[in-house]
Image 1: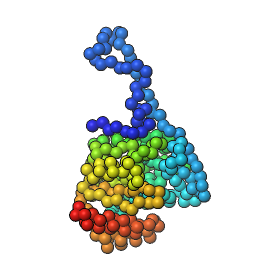
Image 2 (image 1 turned 135 degrees about the vertical axis):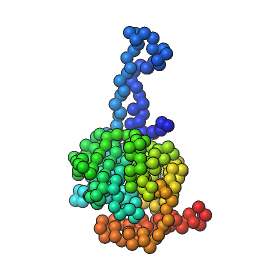
Image 3 (image 1 turned 90 degrees about the vertical axis):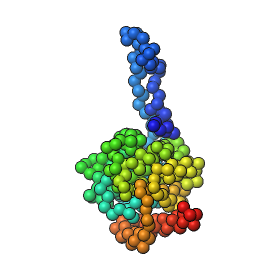
Image 4 (image 1 turned 120 degrees about the vertical axis):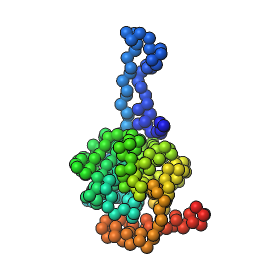
Length: 289
């Protein structure tokens, strides 16, 4: 099923240029038939940067922040919601393959590449300018035998059978310049994301909590995943949702112990993640879900 994308990039992709291509039945003689129009290249919003107090921010021609990097700590995950996107680490200590949909400044991709030397790390980004600026301004390493940055549509990636059942973790952060919610947000998209995961795999996705796009996306995620958890909103209003491909039992003493290990190794505020999972789980139990 084709997925309608609410992005200027996708709209540009659908424009076939001047003229219309006829069907086989009305093409007439091949000598008089019009040549098929060339597909137009997608149009992207401009990639722009700003800097404040030693932090460089990525924008798509607007004030909306698409990612950040602290100049003195290029491998640190600067934004709080992006830190929460790593909450799958509570459940998997040694992933073999991790994928990121939507490169941003490459913060999550760099972190996974450095933190898990045994893992294959894949990032998927539609806009070639974002890939270029990540290499030139945000210290993203070049591709090697463990790192692959793919210039392609995220929907094509998750629909590819070659990727199904291969991922331990999938991180989804798909916003364009309009920032009207994720550009891919249907049950079919999230079902394809779930299909890419191994049986114990986990997806994390960045949503806007106080936004009309939130209930639509969360409903679609619940449709596609056996179990879900929403972490507490961060001060920017982002809500990170965890989607588990198979039902998950939560051993909270073990999760707190694992959180201490992660914090000792990375300085990430992992105890708050477990607190959020526990609060969500408790609320679900009260509702009888």
